[in-house]
Amino acid sequence: MDASNSAYIRFLNYLDAIGRTDSKGLNAVEEQLLNYIAIADSKGQTVLVGDLIALRQFGSQATLHGRLKGLIAMGYIQLIDDQVDGRKKLVTPTAKAISHYEKLSACLEKALKTS
Image 1: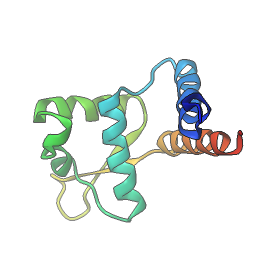
Image 2: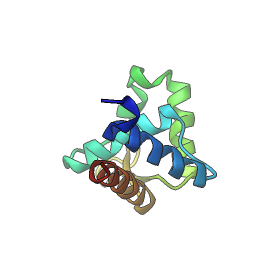
Image 3: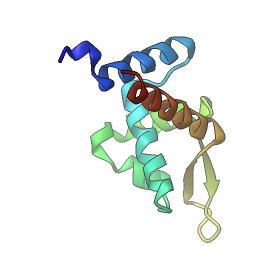
């Protein structure tokens, strides 16, 4: 089988196409961080800013703080004050993030249907 005919390569091509239409796309680290937040949210888990800042897999604390600010500025996540402890901030995906994952899902479905 030619690798260019694989569903995964078609999926990557579709991602590339939608990435070029999005003038302010996510970089790899932002995408991974957003994925982490979205997966936790889908499992009903609470994600706090402090939890994310402690994750070394995404970079230093300063880098992560900047990435979170960027995701907020781009509209992918929002911070909500904790009801019990106002010093804590909950991180949740926004409607834009949900739309982003719907687009990715559509690309995956399209890649799988194309033969």
